Length: 87
Image (tube, rainbow, N blue to C red; front, side):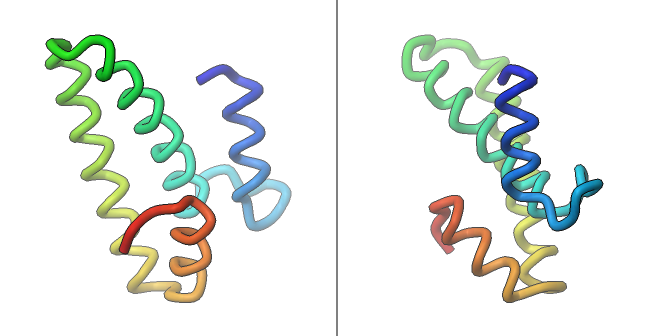
């Protein structure tokens, strides 16, 4: 993920101009990275170190989604529909 792409994702999902670490931003960044690693693993099937990192990211995203669903249900539903995640 290059710097410009990362910054664009942050600006798309931030709540206010200085927001860089809210749950929504973190989930969007992790989702983007998960997509990149999934593409990498399609060509490099035996790369188990990357697979482990991918599984850790999926777990982290799941924990953040559970937190967001508990604390702000409206934001949660809007975010998962915007990212195209299943729940």
